[in-house]
Image 1 (cartoon, rainbow, N blue to C red):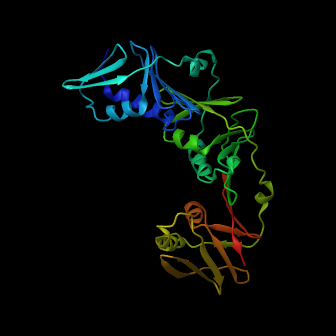
Image 2 (cartoon, rainbow, N blue to C red):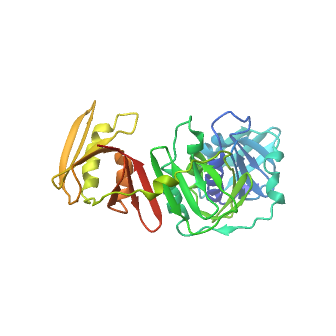
Length: 337
């Protein structure tokens, strides 16, 4: 067959590669499947299906094929055919062959029997989910914190055990709570998602190109951080210049393998920001108004810089600080003296 629009095949691969795994947990985890109606890729947690017709059916290594495809020209048709046990590709003088195997139909037949009751994703869904994902733990020993919790009332939650995030996405997605891991969301949120459909064990996402991605829900119990949502204490308006100061402080943490803590010291209507690492030390003072006794705290500067992009009123509680808007709530543990 002849692929006249190579870019369309590239578009299909850009979606399907989200479900291509580089691990060897499953023997076919890096495979893509060419079928009569779809290009399909899958790993142990995801299946991606892009609507595209082929006149052959076979599987081959998706990582190698996607890399090869990226080197081809868009304006020259690509010839593809199966001969014996190879997928042969030809574009003018360029030729390549890829070993193929039989289709693993049991991995994606499930799509055909589902009556999708799609829910259109709201305007805030992607932006709020990106914020939530960044607060998930990446610690392999705390697996239940490596996911975003989608509650049945339209609230999403995430925490790494130190920071927490909660937001209302403004729409109900399912009649039950469910978890999707940050690793899967890393792959999903680079795509143009438009709709969702959730059932027990699986969530299905549709893209603007009518591709469908099936992701396995994570089976774990999320933590209850309700007590931290009522943080009380003095409030302080953080000056906008603090972001630039924190960027200077972060220069001294660039080679560290862990997130550093910066020291914030409130005294005499001044805020002193300081950090000391093996790379050296830094401090800078800013003017700030507040009505509480001298106070010192240590906090993750990456968290603080992200929050200050949208809100500058900080509530200082008992070893905990918080920020909130009409749509979301951020909180973080802070070593306060």
